Length: 138
Image 1: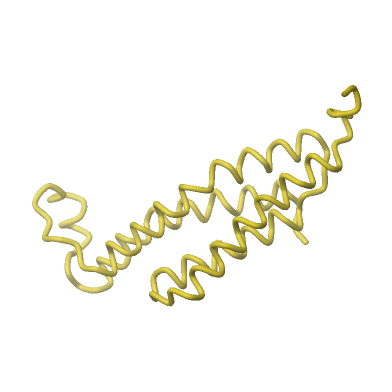
Image 2: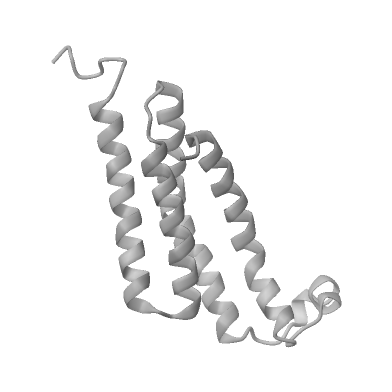
């Protein structure tokens, strides 16, 4: 299982990949050219539905990514081993994006729910395995 820091770096790379994915789909469909995208951005035709879905997948990723990033950094700083939950979250998000673009709604819902459960798993591990005795004084 990869280290939590490696998972954070992978998630950052995946964020960059998701940022460029709609434009790649748009160019690969043949609707626009790279030259039009770079030099004629304000007069582009309306985006096809697959491009809009890829942009929605990016927006969906951005909804839970700050929570994941904060929990991962907190786990790294506190020395709490949350690498299994973090890697599972990342794998679920990979599948979620694929199912989102393919419009396989039931699988998309299951992977989204699994990724949310992974975030709660990370929270539970941080609270339960806290080596700084956060709750011992109460």
